[in-house]
Image (cartoon, rainbow, N blue to C red):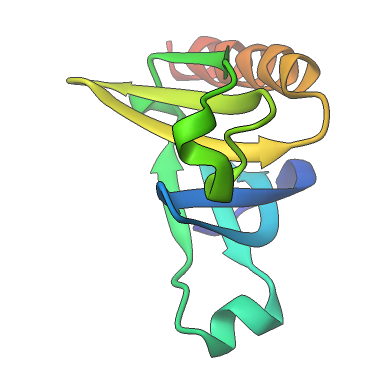
Amino acid sequence: MTGEQRWGRGASRVGSRFRAAGGTLLVLGDDVVFRPSPLERRLKEPDWALPLAEVTGFRVAGVRVLDAFAGGLRPRLALDQGRGTTHLFVIADPASAAKELLALAAESAVGRV
């Protein structure tokens, strides 16, 4: 989880249907990283990371009323990991974030070839 910061935005990571933790979503080197806010750290929210190479897609997840307490009343950024695993983030302008992250992932993939 080290490396040059290539991208970053304030975001909340959805941990369950009932909770989203506030913090910052970053791209550090070739990893997507979520760093919780100081308050969330006090509540024992851990850092989260995923190599860009493991992300199979970035998209906008639609509104889902059942997830109201986890940002479900607005579109969210979805990071698909494959094998049916999706990580959700409440973020301003998720469509723009998905596009920017897709470009970074493509750039990283080209660098690995």
